[in-house]
Length: 136
Image (tube, rainbow, N blue to C red):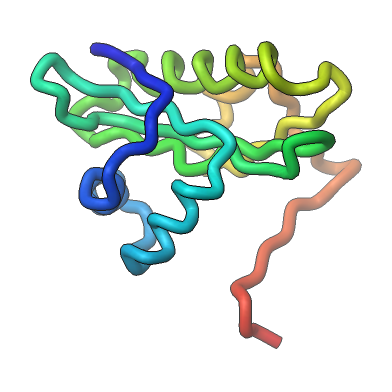
């Protein structure tokens, strides 16, 4: 398994999104997200097929967020998630201010992955919220 700091193709990103069960989005939105990423780490197998990825987005100064942590189901539990996360955090440690905040939203099953890398639950001090654009 090899992990690279690279922008995957739109087709590869769409395929890994579908395989990992992420919500479907249009190709132009995927491309825009990739283009505006601060860093994208991609895990590839020995045949150069994408098997996992994760991205960093943010303002480049105070706040960063790890998003799109996705791994093909047949590779779950193989340590790829941990390797991608480590590489993303290594990137931030090398390029971001030590005063910057790194955030992540996680499903319940992945909380331990992030906790073992130093992330702490913010509840009850803070609550995470979301909404879709166009909702009222």
